Length: 253
Length: 216
Ligand SMILES: Nc1ncnc2c1ncn2[C@@H]1O[C@H](COP(=O)(O)OP(=O)(O)OP(=O)(O)O)[C@@H](O)[C@H]1O
Ligand SMILES: [Mg+2]
Image (cartoon, rainbow over all chains, first blue to last red; front, side, top):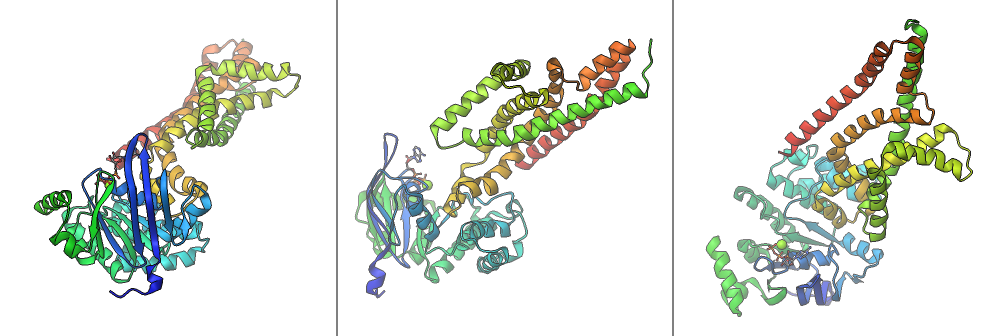
């Protein structure tokens, strides 16, 4: 894949990031560069710090060491920097976190109206566009509880897209789903990847990683152990821990 | 021995009117300040949390009667000559704000953390996160307890009689002294309280049941 020089400027950059929960060292000296349009799959055993890492990127967690820069804005404790970063980065959670007292349409229009100050008709038009894209436009007037898990997660993806972010963070978006619904969500994510969205996905769906990822990053005990393009990562993992992890994951699938 | 005629009933109705007015003031004033208390109680600032925790402890830990006395005679003591009305309204507002604040604090904390995180991730600020996302869910969770407190408050207004306020209970006492028919009079007074409180209690029980089936 040819890269222009402009594309070499990372959209998201982590430099020597360190994170502690009290005395517990959750992230150790993490450095990661994500170019515009790049798709990263983040994997690793439970408790290795994958969620923590992506939650630091939009400042749902703060860091004690190092630096995180998104689209030229370095995250500090200033509300201004946090706002700027959250405007560029959307997030999708394992448990969807749709607002249960609002319809799917209202879930989608809330942030465009409150954050961007768009009018209701404007935000509804945007919402319809993205709800159609995740193929649940016909469910717009329902409440989240009336939708299947797969539909809810697609609604959550649409809600994040309505803010027209430059990058999307996914934290195990399919782990809470019944097996028959995993595919519809993965297909939505693959579509998003095809359209050039910059994505960081925490997932154990190795088929998705093979198909979509530019790079797979493997974490264990708060460190990046190894990273590489999916072909080399899956065929020739260099580290013992990676091999052990892959053995386990592939045995389960 | 006098009988209970239209005049007496009218007098009781006047008392009832004050009971309802006091309840309304306590509930509205307490609701507004209670919301502030609940937000401060769940704020990020530890100082705010400590102050409101103390406030709630004081008002939950002392009898409403004493709170009425303190406000009523307290403001007189510091040289302010305020209307009985105002003193009672202040006392009920303080009392209700502590209780409602604590009830709603529980409701706010019962809203899953993922809701706030999703709101933050979308870029929503505190005001919108609270107003659009957290509070609507918190109020729904707190509705049964809120109604329960409202019922307590209605009955609690009878204590205002102590500082010379003629609400329903005090009106009953006066009429009973005039007519020497305490049983009849207090049966009427009791029935009036019951007819207001019972439907509220039923409503509270029903919303509670509905919440339970909804979360199942
Ligand atoms: N709020 C918190 N307070 C204290 N410790 C935490 C907190 N959140 C996470 N941790 C700890 O930090 C470590 C990394 O957690 P994290 O959730 O990032 O792991 P993960 O790789 O996402 O795991 P999983 O695959 O189970 O989701 C874990 O040991 C976890 O117990
Ligand atoms: Mg996780």
